[in-house]
Image (cartoon, rainbow, N blue to C red):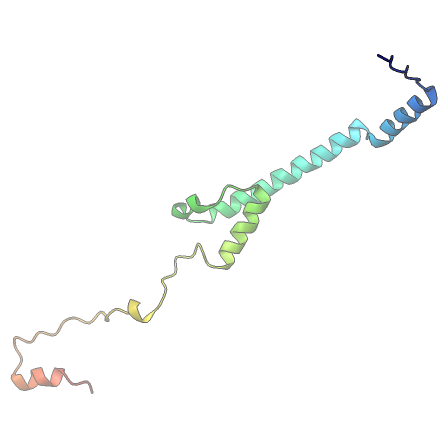
Length: 121
């Protein structure tokens, strides 16, 4: 069985690799600053989302999907534009109900008066 060839380590190559690694790294202070800004932005989005959810009736809050806060805000905005959370009654020909007129008392009417109530003037 042939013996493996020894690996020759060149100090110049090792130094180049270390330089490349250092170029791709960022300082910890800058990283902490970016992370802090991101946490502040996420907290602000959560406050906005909580305000939007408070505007929705209690009985309809269960239908809000479980998404990330930014996507949930987009979903709520679209649902509100479409009137999804409005309590409006849909007006259609079938939903028209008779008016609030009191029923006519026919007991004390003459036959002519009864017939007259059937005609609209």
